[in-house]
Length: 248
Image 1: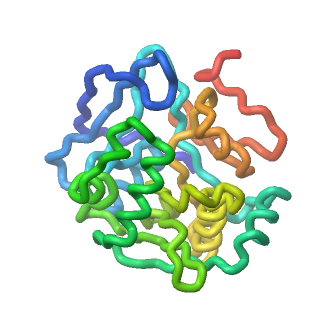
Image 2: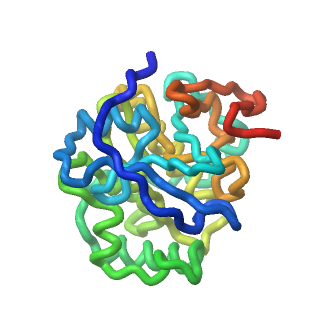
């Protein structure tokens, strides 16, 4: 069942260059940062298409574009595709190790390597430890750093929030020198398995952006639900994603 819209004080950011689509400008609606936040309230907000960056809770609200759509996977109905099964076989020696959300030098070094490879020239590539912590950790959320370990070697970390109705993938970073291992995909599959263990119905993936190549992988996980016009719309395997926000 879809949630009723919440009535909370919101602020609209100034336009800035979009990080997903070249030549576009983005704006976001922010929850009042002075408002006390809890896991229960944040869980409701995530169901309404919001997510967090550090302790700031926001939702895209661009005047000329509506491509940023919150995405989630209904865990019980997910069926792995052939490429997912290949990824699981290629990483059969990997294990997911939950750790508490705090700064670790080993994590930060891997984060620096990943962002230098994936976001070269951007602000994330030169983050200081304080910026890294401010981006991923907040004191009001139930957050875990899920390590990808092969023996004792750290290959990745999925920063994940536990909500009332699911897990929310905040950010995942991994060894950029192992593209054939598809560690990002493995991280989603591992979080889906963790949802099953915890008996949580959804894995929230953040935003899917149709015309952003880096976001297209999310549409490979079916069924997929996208938050459109205050309701979740479900798309099955092989079904083309058609929504009012996405003109041909």
